[in-house]
Length: 131
Image (cartoon, rainbow, N blue to C red; front, side, top):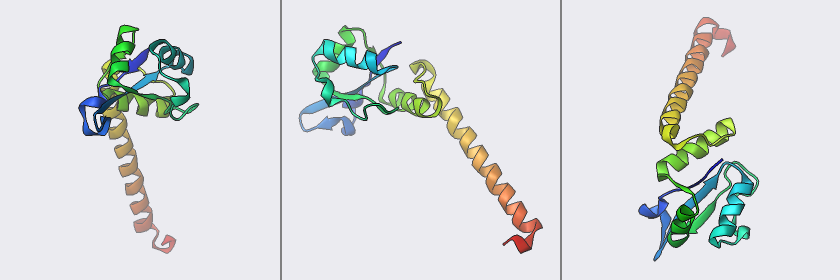
């Protein structure tokens, strides 16, 4: 089980005036809460508590503290891909294959939708009375 911290601060979405923010995510709520307590973040600031989107937005100074405390640095893209995987499968998985997994997931979903659309169009062609 692992805690991860992304580099959202590098992008406009992670910059709030002079504040630069990162996401802190973990495999479990207990790990996430243990980390924020260790780095001095108030646990009441948790976002989407109890859901698969559960995380903290932390300042860049807390990001450094989290890494020093053992959090694994990941990219903003890896964080997004890992969160999507958790929504689909229930697990974050590893950052090393998260972006590849997301690409495969999107390709499979597109293929499934295209197949369904083709099947629907054939039904209408074969059975005009079904319209």
